[in-house]
Image (cartoon, rainbow, N blue to C red; front, top):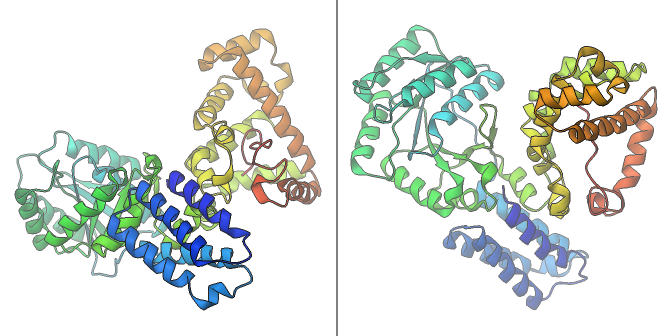
Length: 470
C-alpha cells in the first residue's frame, strides 16, 4: 500500500533533506510536486488543497526558515499533517456496553464485508479475549449465509443460522436474543450489500439499525476504489450514524487515496485495514504509523506487535536454545521458519513495514517472493525425516524424487539446498556469543546510508538468504 505515493514523496523530500536553507521558491516547487503526488494517489481534491495549504503555511514560518536543518523540519511538518489528515491516533472499537455489544457491518457488494466479519471475530477473540457470535442478514446474495458459516468455523466464532426466506430484522432480533442467552460479549451482524447506493437498501439498513441499536456501525469499503470510497462512505454516513470504517484490499492498493481522503470527507475514523485474504489479515489503523510508512520510515511498532501475536514463541525459543548449544540447524527448522513467516502475512507484508524499503530497487524487491516460501515448504515436505536432518545425502535420484513429489524442478532443489547451506553457516556463527558479533557485522554492512548503504539491502545488496530467523 502507498508504494507509488511513498516513492514520489520520498524523491521530492530527499531533494530538500540536505539543503542549507529553504526559500519561498523551493518550498513552492516542492509543494507543487507533493500536490501532484497526492492527486496521482487518487486523494480527493479538497483534501489535497487543504493539505498543501497547511504545509505551505507552516513551511514559510519563521521557525523553519531559521532552523539549521530546514529540509528535515519540512519533512516533519509533512509527516504531522499526514497524521492529522488520517485522524491523529488509532480509534479502537467501543465495546463498553451491556453484553452483547452489537457491531453492524454495512457496505457495497464486493467490498469484502463477509470476510471482514470473520477477520474482526478472530481479532476480537485473539487480542481482546471476547466471545463472539456472528449472523448473516444477507438474504439476497446466493450462498452469503453459507459463506459466513464456513468462515465462522474457521475462526471459531459462534454462528447463528438464518434462511433466505426470513426478514433481515427478524434474523437480527433472534440472533441478539440468542447472544444474550449464551452470554456472548459481541454480536457481529453482516448485512446485505448492493452494487450501488439505493433507497431500498438504505431503508432496510436503517430499520436494522433502529431494531438492534448497535454500539458500532462499521462501513466496509474497498480501498482500490480510491476517492470513490470516501464519497460512498459519505453517502452511507448521511443515512446511518457510522462510527468507523474498515478499509479492505489495501495489500493490492499501491495508491492509498482512500486512506488519505476518508477521514477528511466523512469525519469518521478508519478503525481497521484489511491487508490480505486470510482471516488473520486485519490490522488496527494507526495514522502516525501509516504516515511513517508513506515517508519511507517503516512501521517497526506494528512489526513488533505482529511478531508478538503471530510467532509461535515456544518453537522460536526451542530453536534459539538449539542453536546456542551448537546443535545443528536442519531443514525441519528451516521449514518452521518459513511457516512462521507465512503466518505473519509473508515476506511482502514484512518488507512493507521495514524502514527504507521505498529506496530499495524494484529488481531487489522482486526477488522477495511469497510463492518461493510456499515452494520451499512443499519441497521440504517431500523429503524424508532423514533427508531433512542430513541434507548432504540428497543426491541425484533423491533430488528427482523430491522434485516429482513437490511439483518442482531439480534446479529448485539445488537452489534450496544452496540457500540452506548459507543459512546454516549463519546459524553456526550464532553459537555461543556469536550473535552479538553477527549483529555488529550486520550494522557495519548497513552502511552510513542505512538500508541503501554499500552491501546493505540497497543496490548490490540483497535480502538475507531464506528470510529472517524468528
